[in-house]
Structure formats: structure tokens, C-alpha cells
Length: 316
Image 1 (tube, one colour):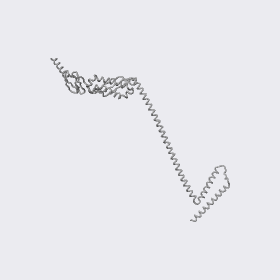
Image 2: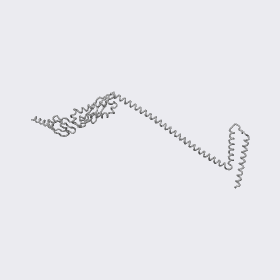
Image 3: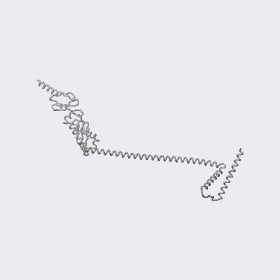
Image 4: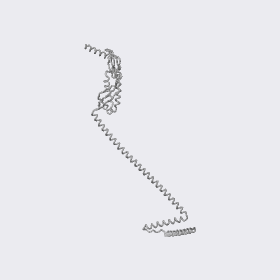
């Protein structure tokens, strides 16, 4: 009896599980009736005919992350590198994903590897790191084009690692070290060149300033001399004008002649004292005439003084 009850419960559970199906929010279920596609079951509670209907495929409708295994690729310059990546895809049509291909995940991985080998072979090793974004876009475009009949949408692809061989890594490190040394030498030489340029510019500016200062000094000196000459000329002109005015007065001409005689006698006496040679006039008559003229000037001067005294006494 207990065995029969157990069989009845087991049969009832089997019927219930075949009769009802619950589709979760994250998936879609392909319903087949007698082996043929019936419809796509959306999330919720659905009724099925036991032994007639069945849930053939359950498709994940969320975005899926697929790990693309590492593989060896050869670059354009014949260098082997190990490359792996990650693909992000999503099922857009559960019917195509169920009937269009047997395993879309495996197909997407193989297609990603094939496309990645093709893209790596188009560029050199030095460009594999800088052209990573472009390779990702090309891989996504190629996979998405091939996966459209499968009802799959490739959202993005990321190259995770690009690993050259150890020998290539050592060579690249040496190359980078040499490049850094070259850049350091170039920077040092440019610094020295800039320093020399700055020093030469400083010397040039200093010489310009010195020449400007000298030119300004000469200009100032010339202006000073010009002003001095002008002042001397004005003073000389004033003196000459006053002398001429004094000469024009009564007795002025005689005073001038007397002054010239005195200067002549002084200079003649200095010449006689400072020389060992006896100086004689060329013509004795000239010397006699000279002293006679001096006596006449003296008498005339005394006569003028006497008349001035008389005029003065009369005025008193």
C-alpha cells in the first residue's frame, strides 16, 4: 500500500512538472509541441500539455561575459605574442539562438580568436599596444556581422593581455633603456644649447646697453661742450661788445694802446729772462721809435689827467 502511494505521488509530481512551467525574468523558454516549435515563453507561469509539449531550450537573456582563451599570434614583423580577451554578448532572439546554431558561445569564442589573429597579423609589435582600441572595434564588427543569423549581439570586446616572448621582452627593455638614455642626452644638450643661447643673448643685450650708455654719454658731453662753447661765445661777445663800447668813449683808444704796450713789455721781459741768447732789435730806429711813442703816450696821459682834475675842481 505504501509503495502504491509512493508511486502515485511520484506520478502526480511528474504530471505537475510537465503540466506547468515557470519562466524566470532573466530567461526565455522555447516551447515545442510534438517536436516542432510552438512559441517562445516569456517570463511568468505557463500551462503545457504533458507528453505533448516540452521546454526545449532555455536562453539567458542577460548580457554574458565570455572568456576568450589565450592563443599565439604572429605580428606583421614576424614576432610571436600570446593574446587573450573577453567578449561581451547578449541574446537578442532566443529562437535564432536555439535553432540557428548549436552552441553560440563556442562559435563566438572561435570567431573572436580567428579575427584576433587576423588583426594582430596586420600590425607590428610596437603598434599592438597603441592600436588596441582599433583592434577591439574591428573584432566586435566582424563577430557581430557573423553572429547576426544566430540572434546574438556582440556588445564589445576587450583584449586583456598581449604577452611577447621573454627574449622579445628583454630586447624591448634594452631598447626602451637606450631610448631613455638618448632622450636624456637630447634633453641635456638642448638645455646646454638654451643656456648658451641665453648667455649670448645676455651678453648681446649687455653690449647694447653699454653702447647705448656710451652713446648717451657722448651725446651729453657733446651737448655740454656745445652749451659751454655757446656760453663762452656769448661771454666773449659780451666782453668784446663792452670793450668796443669802452673804446668808443673818449680816451678809450689810448687806453687800449697803453694796455698793449704794457703787455708787450711784460712778454718781452719774460723772453729775455728765460733765454741765454741776447735779443736785439733788427732795426735800432724801430726801438727808438718805440720808446718815443711810449713817452708821447705817457705825456698825453698826464695831460688828460691834469685836465680832468681841473674840470673836477671847477665843478666843485
